[in-house]
Length: 296
Image 1 (cartoon, rainbow, N blue to C red):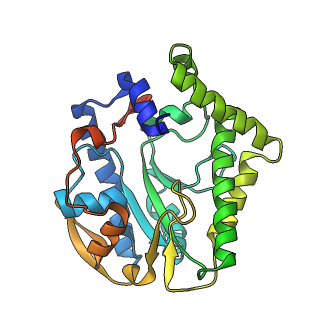
Image 2 (cartoon, rainbow, N blue to C red):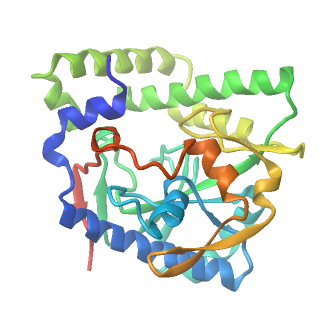
């Protein structure tokens, strides 16, 4: 069976963003990023470009041409500073959403949504929650030293993370996926299995229950030489030396100067291996949107 991203890409090709629409979306994302950068610089908050956005800055001096999102990262302590000034500086144009902040917000990640826009992803099209264009904000968390404590947290986090995801499919099924399941056998089997798992896990707790477990496990007061970025890749999916995020350098991104880790070579190598190698078209992630409106 295909992984979910390639399966959805195959099944929902009619929702792929055109090159023109993708460039327009990238422009909106850039505007959000620049506003975040401006506030962070005003209050001396250390933010960094993350993931594909950091890679784009180094390899393309801007967006990876086929990318449709923006990722930034902060240590949790820096996020608290950002959160403290958000309402005063940005709430007229943006909405800050974090796990458990609202009973209709089921993402495990922090997102900054641009008001007056629409962006509905196919897997979450059945959720009555925020559906605007957003930037992802990933938290760098303290990681316990290797040992039984770290291993137990990894197992518990990964189970709770997957449980919240399949419970979402069970309780808020996506209309376009349900419709496509009628004609695509592979998708029908995949989605039915996810929803069955969601039914099973929902017998023991709600989506919020599993999100609370993830949130509690992600936080750690013990400071070691390592940090992690608990996310859809799991509790230990992204593990880095702490030193990578204590010094910064500047990189150009679409004509703007942005912060990235000073040792970006190590950071990007951990995430992507030979990151300067451009993948062939068949290995590039295809992006789509069930509904999209860029606003004014």
